[in-house]
Image 1 (cartoon, rainbow, N blue to C red):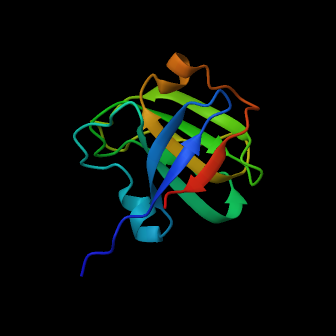
Image 2: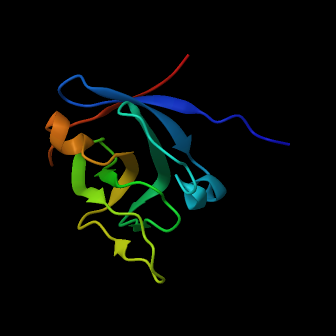
Length: 129
């Protein structure tokens, strides 16, 4: 049986937004955006965690560059990796934030630069109807 994918709006401080698939289970978080062929400008993935930690991410089997944005429990941006490249070697590099996070957003590579997303910005997360 296939479970329906939850989605949410992730709205940045300047009003720019993405519709994000929500990865809130171990299985969904492990799969992430692996094998996905492309990601449009206003698409992404939102990873949620019950306990704030320094969650590491890698680009294994991801087919496009991604911006990775870590948010604390108040939804404030605490770390950013821009245009992390797909990983073609093994082992893949791990992107580990310098601060604890409760949420991580993956975006199309270059989104952060194109929209002026910065450390310290506050992000709004709202569920779609």
